[in-house]
View 1 (cartoon, rainbow, N blue to C red):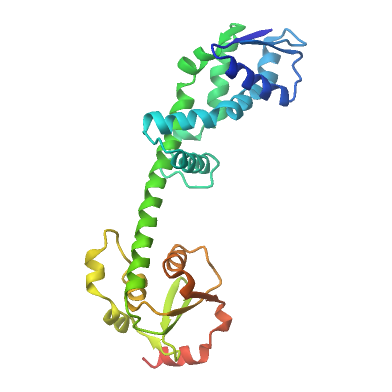
View 2: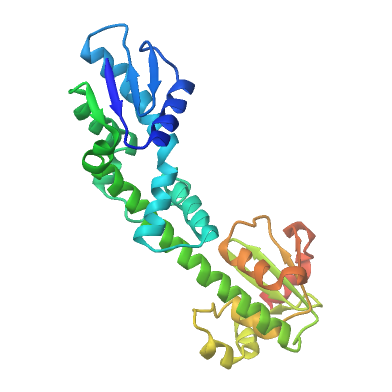
Length: 284
C-alpha cells in the first residue's frame, strides 16, 4: 500500500483523475481530500515498482507538466502575456517531442524525461508514504532541469521567430513603397538554386541582378538580407512573380512568399518554357 499526501487538494484531485483514466493492474485506488491511497494485489515491492511507477510517471506528466512549464516561462523568464506563454509552451513541446532539433543536445540529455521522474519515484516509494510536495521540491530537480533546458530552447526560437516576423514586415513595407522595376518576373527554383527570368523569359545573370540591388537597402537592414535572391527581388519589387518549384518547405521560398504575398503565383517547373531559358543561359 502507498499513501501519497498533498498540501493542495486540487493537485490531489487532478492526479487522482489521471490515475483513474490509466490502466489499473495494481488493485484499488482511493481518494480522500488530500490523500491518494493505492492498494496492491501483491505485497511484493518489485511488483509494485514495475507495475505502478510507469503509470504514475505518465499521469504526473499529463496532470502537471504543462503547468510547471508555464511556471518556468512566467516566473523564471518573466513572460507574463498569456498569448506569449502559450506560444512558448507549444515551442517547448516541439523540442520535447523531437519535432525541432535540440542543438544543445548532449550525452546527459539522452535519458528520457520519463526515466528521470521514474528514478525519483523509486526513491520515494521505498517508504510507502510520501509527500507530493516533497517529491516536487527535492526529488525532481533533474526533471526540472530538463524542462528548463527545453524552455530555454523554446524562448531562443521564439525570439528568432519574432525577429524574423519583424524582418518580413519591414521588407513588405519596403516592397509596397517602391516603384516596380519590373512588371513580371519568372523565378525558377531547381537543384537548390534560383534562376531569374524577365517577362520575355530571358535569363538575368548574377551581374545583371547586382545592378538592380538598391545599396541603401543593404545598409539599412538590421538583419542580414541575402544578396543573391532576396535583395534583388525586394529592390525590383515586381508587380507579379511567377515562381516555378516542386517544393515549398525551403526557407527562402517561404520568406519570398511571406514578403510578396499576393504578388506570388506558384507554378510547377513543367510550366516553365525551358527551351527559351536554356538557350539564353548557354548563350551568355
